[in-house]
Amino acid sequence: MTKQILMTGIGAAVGIVAGMVVMMMLHMASTLVYPLPDGVDFMAQDAENQTRLKEWFRSLPTGAFLLAIASHGLGCMAGACVAMLASQRRSIVPAIIVGVFFTVGGIMNLSSIPHPAWFPLVDLPIYAILALLAGFRLRKQKQPHGELPALAVSGD
Image 1: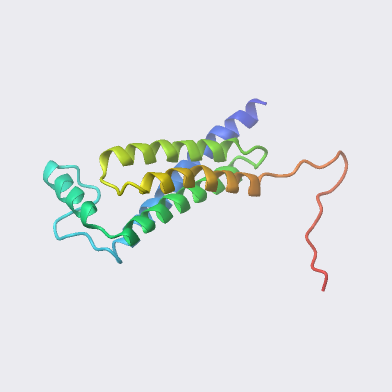
Image 2 (image 1 turned 180 degrees about the vertical axis):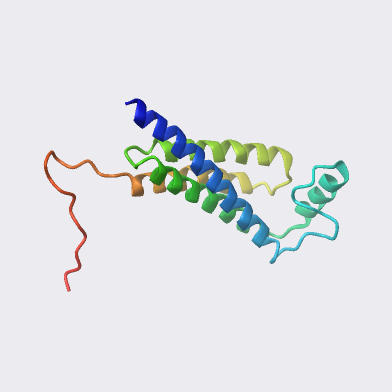
């Protein structure tokens, strides 16, 4: 039992890191489609940069926000997949932990970055949906005692 709890925690932590990396890479890639204005940096925290970044967000079209939702969802799903694999796939708890972490991050994001009114209605449910999908899809199925898992075999 202790080993499973440890593996769940390690899996969730590794999944969160992996998911954040995937999400940030996708966000950076989206700037190829919707470039940042000159002198604006995603990572810089100074007040002038943050003001210019918020102005840029207000000017973005719907497609940019759809790319952001895709980045968030795919990052969360990748993180949930890594969490499941790293935790030996016995339970979906690691995927749920990743989904909760990303949802909390999404809520914080909504309070600090301007978004259209429809954005939270689409963005926030994506985290739970994709984390659960990854968790259920990758969870090992319990087999009756002594039986081997069924293999998918083509009928051809």
